[in-house]
Amino acid sequence: MKFTIVYSTATGNTENIAERLQQLIPSSELKDLDYVGQTSDLTAAEALVCCIPTWNTGAPEKRSGTSWDQHLDNIRGLDFSNTVVAIVGLGDSAAFSKYFCDAMEELYTAFLNTGATIIGKVPAEDYIFDHSKSNIDGLFCGLPIDEDNESEKTERRLSQWVAQITSQV
Ligand SMILES: Cc1cc2nc3c(=O)[nH]c(=O)nc-3n(C[C@H](O)[C@H](O)[C@H](O)COP(=O)(O)O)c2cc1C
Image 1 (tube, protein in one colour):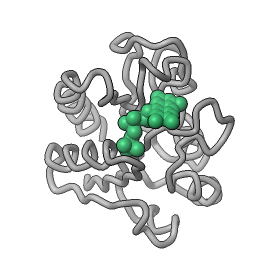
Image 2 (tube, helix red, strand yellow):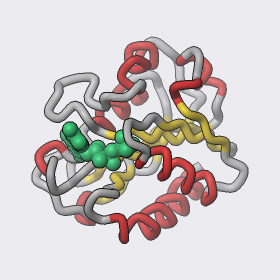
Image 3 (cartoon, helix red, strand yellow):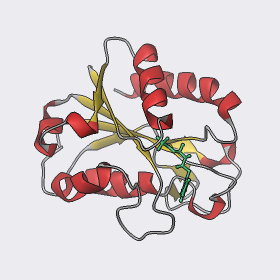
Image 4 (cartoon, helix red, strand yellow):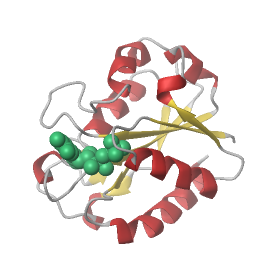
């Protein structure tokens, strides 16, 4: 299965992680969401890895603060029933411990309701945080990455997760 990695970023961390994922996932494609013309272009992918930071702390909606927020409504109106979707969230588990990677859940729920097959959930016990909307019954709905406090754990997290998602398709 061919993976298309799509990211949006404000200060570059998510772009960097998306580039590292491209190195780890054989024959994957990398796309900056800012250069994806129509949201419907995403339906052409066999498998999407959606990389999303959280900036809008505590917001009920449009939690990312990046161009993902402009695509959410369009995603909700599309059919992703033939698409596998995995999500990576960038966040800060210390300074924003009550809102850690909240934006992942918004994207997760949007894709779930379109019929997408969601893969790549991870146990929350690998992280120290107070609360996250993306923690659903002890499982994060995607892979949280914290470059602000735990960058030394990123290499292991990415390689374990890539092994997980490539075995789930
Ligand atoms: C003003 C501000 C608000 C933030 N809000 C959150 C938040 O609510 N939850 C979270 O997990 N991280 C939050 N972060 C941390 C960023 O998500 C984190 O630094 C991320 O790596 C940024 O990714 P980017 O460089 O791709 O934009 C915030 C950072 C700043 C400076």
